[in-house]
View 1 (spheres, rainbow, N blue to C red):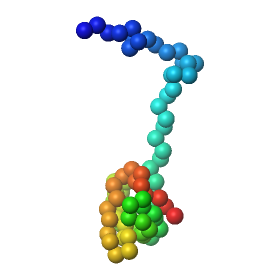
View 2 (cartoon, rainbow, N blue to C red):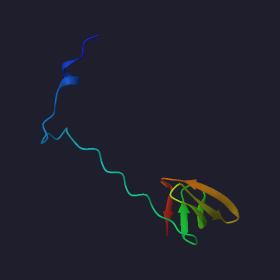
View 3 (cartoon, helix red, strand yellow):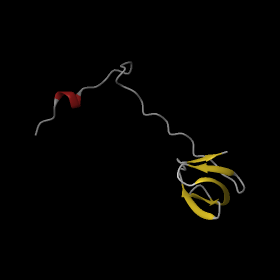
View 4 (tube, rainbow, N blue to C red):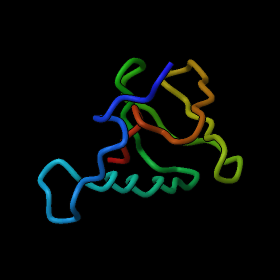
Length: 76
């Protein structure tokens, strides 16, 4: 199968179609005692931090382990 012309086309750096990938937002850092809000579980308090990999959160008596990159967890 031959390669199409469109797949070999190079875009100019000033072209509006040549957009660099957006930079990933920095990963939020949490500490024990921080108040947080989760999209699914609601309000909670951080009870433990496992480095940059996970945080342990108490959501009104229900424990949860939230893994990095913490997209649904917001510090209040």
